[in-house]
Amino acid sequence: MDYNKYEDTVFKKAMGIFQQSAVDFFNFLVAEFMV
Image (cartoon, rainbow, N blue to C red; front, top):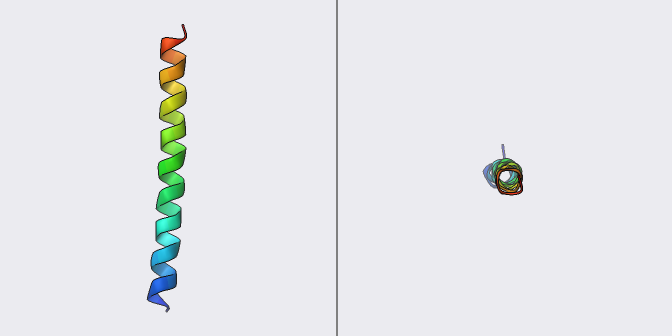
């Protein structure tokens, strides 16, 4: 197993999860303050 490739995949997956969480959180804030 190529360790660098594995690490890169994990990093990309983590970044994708983080970005999705950030978007969800931002949408939540907008919904809260735009009432």
